[in-house]
Length: 102
Image (cartoon, rainbow, N blue to C red; front, side, top):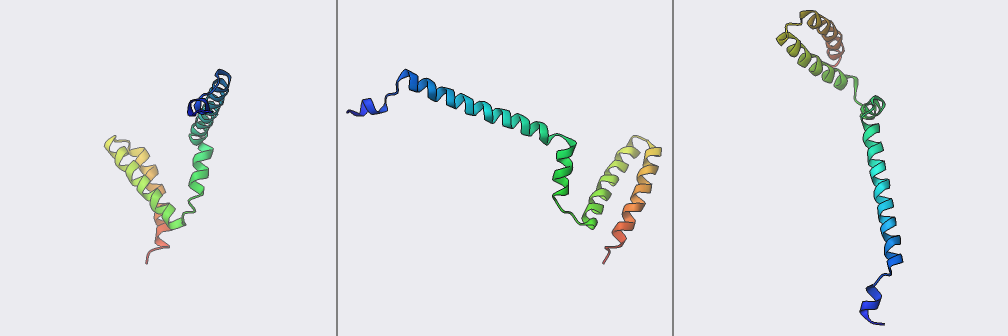
């Protein structure tokens, strides 16, 4: 046998290989689509967030940062009723943070 004969595939073998490649690519694409869909659901977001195992203090700090950002946006938009709601929530968060003051 020569090197040329070793490297040649029959048309049938080439078609089988092409079918396997396309099939695997379709499975990968389907899995990617599924993952992207699942990743964007609220359940996935909650699951990811809960797996961080954040302490109460860290969660409160994050909530305070979020609330302060919202407060700035709402003040700029002159939505003072919403600012009052944010202020009430900030009082609750500040009580949590006071427990951890050193």
